[in-house]
Image (cartoon, rainbow, N blue to C red; front, side, top):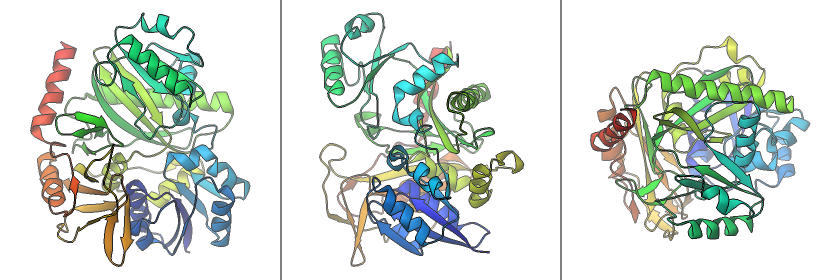
Length: 437
């Protein structure tokens, strides 16, 4: 029997999701609703529609017209708009959480307060402010601070003392600007350690961790430059990371299990989809930086490239509340993802420039992001353009595949050459060894 599936989203993450769906042993027909035309997703789709993620009626009508069995929602924006709720009202269930459950991403303050209320470990010292009253006094109690707008910022709104802000007056000025556009600002103590992503599959009861991944937010080699949506990421063949212990992974997984239970206790509803914990391992254990209510981009490309279990079976098990009935397995291989981005990204990217990928070797996986297909040529639209993923038995081999492949892209692009390299990873290991001593 043909399984008809709706995919919502148009980034490289959704390109990887479309590929995972079409790898299924089941006969599937994919119908994609995108904000912009992703040629990689379009290739896998029986039909696609371009529209706004705010137009819930258009998404619902597209799903009903094509008699889809279930939906897979990729990005945070439609989750925040309530697309899962709208589809469920029409009898179409989704791999993705309802709007009130997606608050773990859309409201950083909500997540911090939830963890505090249910006494879940992993919270740093923090406070949520809706006015400027008390901010200066709280900043004075912290050795270092991190300031986060309470809402979606595309991964670019967080300001860290010593990196983006230096003085308290600068911090106060930024908080004031945030409160003009957001309902609240979250201020946290600055944590020192190494960050990692632990994306967990859940039906609200069972929580299964995918292999940990390390993302690289800074634009340039050596962790320099402005923050981006993510310049690339890597995972290791042993399903750890070089600076992590198995205890770190257990701690991170337990935090997510506790948060899933707290969400059910708080809302009476089960979270279905991905709970992506952005974590940091410190000298005092693993702490939560933030949650995302979906797969990461680029981290989705790492873990979906390794997934051995049928993704359609996983989606159905999550929707039916039977995730405990299937075995989720990943290949014991390493992955390295590197993003080609337009010159000037993220602050002043060139747009509508041609990019040529014809010479990329076949052994690399290629995922389209912000590109437009015009008369058999690709043009960049201003954000991250093309993700290249190497998969191999060792991290070194995976990095070489990604590096040699991304070099073949022609056009006004740049990328981070140090992702997955021995030099950068050795720096991470030395950092954690120093902290743990």
